[in-house]
Length: 412
Image 1 (cartoon, one colour):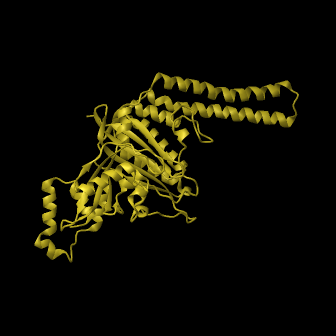
Image 2: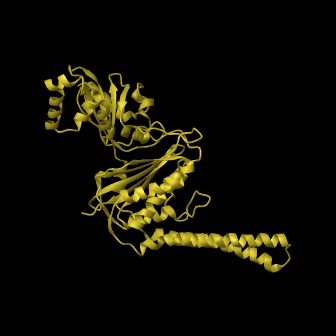
Image 3: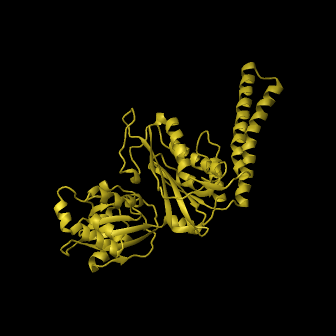
């Protein structure tokens, strides 16, 4: 078995498991059955793509032979584009050097944790291991690079639990005062013009329309503030995250039909129930999924996020590729929240993306980039997840899309 993907899969097995697999693949019975029951190559591809670490296979000239889905996501490049090209076209120098050493010394090399910069300028946090790749005859044919993405672990080690801080609540109060002041000033100015009695009929009608419009703004603001209600009425109980997500996807797939959104579910069915307030968590996830849908223009970018590249791209009536929203759940195995195991929920879109300056303020109260937005949706999401002992992380790239990651602890 000189299939590189097969050898990579063996790296993840125990010694006894490896021997069992090798024995199975080389038994006389298996040889007799090869005509009718060959080992399914698609099976190995599925396993290869499901590995939690990024895997890149290079030949002796450091050209890319293959890579898995995780590697595509880490390095922001599709395997189709990378295949056959020299690895230095997208790999940071630090990772190249680890691979070169493994090939030169013909041994597994463990690189240090590093924070290299991608060719596009984005800094990542990774740990790299490189292993030489040999054929069945023992000839050196290339090198396998394993890359562990540490960005999530680093994020949560710096912010083990987001807190509802006094300064944040002060920001809410200051923002609320500002939001109330603007429409009230408009109402006062319009009313003053009407009272003076010097304006014509058309101008008075216009002033009355301004008063109605600003009053509606106040009403909408107060309705939004009702979102703070869960803080006072939380009921923590076992909650099925997948059940909530399926409810939201069903409703949003119908309401966003005209935008031709393709919803992709990538759920880990082994996840247990989490302790939480169901309504509050549904409010958070609904908000994030709605934001993902709204971020996709009516004529979406043809680029599909790397993690979606294995899914068929369907077309809407216009022939344009669908906008995609991928919802994934998984165990978090690299770190804990409040000394407890955790799960993550990722909501990824291939929309317009968010500017770097906006990312720094995105969870602040009353900050919004939407024309009709209140600026409280993500603020409330942040606070609700904090109350559950979790955290929210956001990553985005202009023109390519955004991913929100929600981390929740699992009570023992």
